[in-house]
Length: 454
Image 1: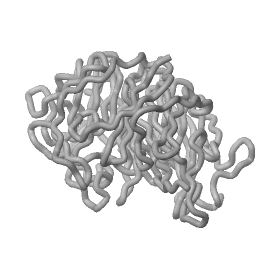
Image 2: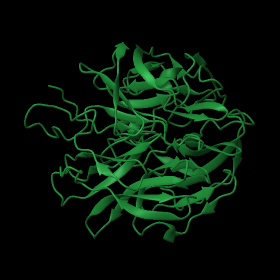
Image 3: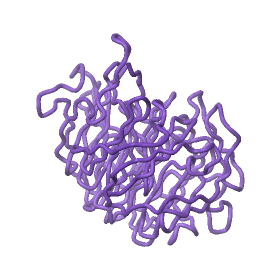
Image 4: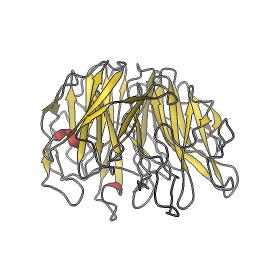
């Protein structure tokens, strides 16, 4: 019997921490993509939290893995097979276990943009960055120069606009609890940087996101045809828009429904879709989505119900509160991920083709539920694997004795891909979409699954 009570489902964007609840910042795909989503942000079914890795601060990007840890790894250049095009179908996955010294294993998020690719690692006090023109040859960006980031800059989001790239940085203190990777203190100032090529960066004024908190203050970033939306997340949610990352317009409080807590935003070819929760009385909240063409005027809320089309009730009690805390996007649809606000909790998935009309997905297809000994806490209340998307495709995947990888362009119809090579462990639940494959980690070991095209 498999016992996997992880609450980890990856997107893009949000991961469960041992302490506190925070929202994961989301590097967003190019607005030219039909659904420009968060490429690698973990998502879970209970209140979200930050998944940054621990990094030793220095003038050169270097990284210390979670405890117990090998020696810090210096961010170096690396080479991968030339990736398929963004919309090419994947036919198979070949897994390879990465050595602790490989920089590839440090990557937390990847953005495909018109100038190539940019990858970011989440460090304790700064974020190593790699750039690539072709997705095959990757070189690290040197920190602490006149045209690059300060060594204490923590990159909380990267997105593409018409003039190039925009990155948001904050300062980050040490982890503040025994949760290791998942407990982070964020510090002002929030700084917006722009770059025409991913190599040279210029700081500008920051978006006004209200009183950023010391913990959980990392903003959420999304890019669409009208530009950028940045939100502080949490409640109250402060948001701002920009067409270029230089000039920012703060949104008035009335732009969003009263009490709406933003947990995730993705950009699409037509605008933005946001997920979160909305209070219905003094003691309960419900999962909803909102949509916007320009990031300033929002429509909705659109409910995410607990009952599927076939009448299956997703939650054990309709008297509980439930919310959505992340989105995974592909070319033709979304999966919203949320959970029951209870102990032990319960993961919830919903699927939509347009971000307005949602159907509940009982039993988390194609992964199915976890299995465990009868009577075990949380049995069957979580998906048996993890979920990730990059705006072009979604992958549902797991390692262990019953490994599998499934691909979808809408979150409703899935194709199982053959898997070969060094199969990841059952505990590997942290996924990152790469242009030519997927990274899967159990936080001590990382595997790269190279995609084979049709």
